Length: 348
Image 1 (cartoon, helix red, strand yellow):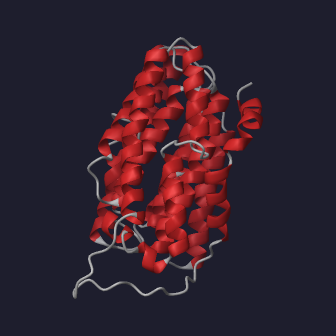
Image 2 (image 1 turned 90 degrees about the horizontal axis):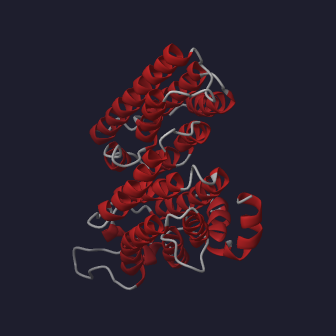
């Protein structure tokens, strides 16, 4: 892609998110989300492969549906209450519609079905943008819109954690596994959104760091399915020793960084007298941990078939910059000792 066009599209991504961040009017927020969607679509379809074009079309239809729902709900709110302000959501019907529209935008279960299919059709770099940056603007609006019916967010959250854990069990494609991982992590964030928005922000931040580490690791090792992970030790032994730690951190296993937000969320849910919900969420984390362990097992404890037709890849020097991966993976693995300071900052 032409670097000038690429710079324009990345500027559009940043502009759309910034407009949504800064807006207090529903039309401006909707406009920012639309700019964001239109900026990423050429990035998604740049390879012109039929699978990529199909994924881009599915993404466009899902986002257009969510944007239409959002616009309809904000117009309904203006009609019912006379207010366009984001903080003046008084009627339960438009509030519920907007929550569902934003859930469709970020891929919360049961509105998640587009997410694995779209991510499977994209390259890892665009998939990283879709899994991280594209979540920011809808999450900003969700933080500002507190639904009148608190049960809706809890149902969306617990459904997402269960579907994200259950859906990834029988997958062999890494991008689909990452999509279900994203759905499960979003469920954890939504569970605690109405009780502690700052804790949701902390979980989102930790999720971004861990997902960035994993996507960059897979990109450097050029892995797209489980079978290619078995040959990664021949290409990058050091990376092969780091990726299982990143995966276990995503699964929330102590003493890694991913345990911190899950620990604090379970503590907050228990404080709110939602111990059964916290128990179901903790059990759903075991489902996710299973497929992370399966990936770790494939990388570290299995060997690729050694026959005449299966040739091992050459260990060539990587031309990609590894400093961002070094910083992100260190943060993914080593930040749990900062838990008291983090808890003091984010759980006021």
